[in-house]
Every structure is written in structure tokens, then in C-alpha cells.
Length: 262
Image 1: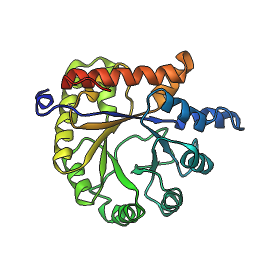
Image 2 (image 1 turned 30 degrees about the vertical axis):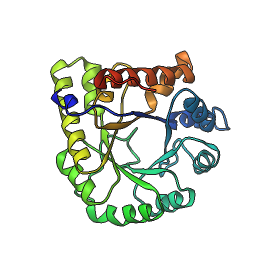
Image 3 (image 1 turned 45 degrees about the vertical axis):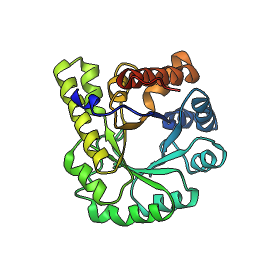
């Protein structure tokens, strides 16, 4: 991956998505397990920020979760949301550190692809403007695609979060050729986005086995990881699971840059 030699990699943040702690809670109702408590544990274990997706059908995170996360949590909150009037009102009422706009379809199990920024330009523009006017950073979750990255920059987004699903599927399948192809695409997309003045994040499907190569990309500033961490926490506890992911990310960044992480 020739892009790794372009410049030394800087610090890399870990955002922990606590959606599926709420999924477990909602399976039986009540208040346990509490996603806010999970967020605190994740932060103590090395997470730099907390991500929560408030879906229109409220299948996991609730409005009250967002309120409590914003009011009681020390690390910054990244609110994942669809570009709708309802979600805009909630964002402007709670003022998270960032809003990550994502596509949303009620029939999907999880977010299945990136936002079509090119095709939704006129729809997204007023939402991005109002979110930024509310002193909230705007992130767009997109597929690894040059035209989507360029459109994100033209719309004034602060951040793009690159969809790592295809790369992670290749890792899970052990498809070496596909892994290399997807990593090259991620590296080239990161370089392009960085050159356009966008902060580069990535996420979706990252695991202990797949995180290092993405963490090593020098333009990468933040990785957002959720379902895998919550799943692994069943076996090893949330604190140690987040701690291990943090360690793998830091080691990959150190190896790429030759600079020790604090």
C-alpha cells in the first residue's frame, strides 16, 4: 500500500457504537442493560467518543438515551441519523459533537450501504446547513466512491465516514485478492477525501482481525465500531474488549508511522 509512505500517520480515535446494548435491553423492555453505562465503560477502556444511531423506528437507541448520553457523558457524542425533519429537531435540541447522516430503510437489519450524496444533493443541502448552523459537525456515511467523496466536499460536510463493509466481508471470507483490492480503494479514497479538506473516518463490520490495516491508513482519524464489540463483550466483558481493540488500533498506527502512541 504505497499511500502509507506519503506522510506519518497521526493519532487515531476510537468511537464505540452502543446501539446494540440498547437492542438487548429492548428485547425484554425495562432499563437493563443501560447503554449509557456501556458508554461510560467504553470510555474508561479507551474509547475517544460514543456513537449512537437514533432510528426512525426506535428499534434500539431511544430519545431518552440520546438525552442522557449528551447530559451525563464526558466523551463527545456522534449522533447517527437520517436526514429528516424529526431527526434534525432532535439533533438541534441535544447538540451532539457531530451528526453522521446515514441512509435508512425500515426493512433493513442494519445500514446496508452508504448515503447517495450525489443523488440526494438537493435534499441533503438544507439539513447540512442547519446542522452546521447549530454548531454541530456534519459527517456523511458513504461508500468508497470518488464521486460521493467529491459531492460530500461540495456540500460542505466536515467529515466522511467510509463504509468498510466490503473490505470486512473479504476478510471474513479469506479472499486475499479482494482484501487487497478493497484496501487499495480505501487508501485511495482516504487520500482523496483528506486532500479535499475532509476529516476521514471509517466503520462498519470491523473486527479484531480486520481493524489493523484500516487503522494503518495515515489519513484515517477515527474508526467507529459497535456490533462486534458488543458481541465480543458477551465473552470477555466490555472493558477488556474495547481495551483490546484500542490496543490493536494503536499498534497498527505505531507500525505505520514509527511513532509511539501516548
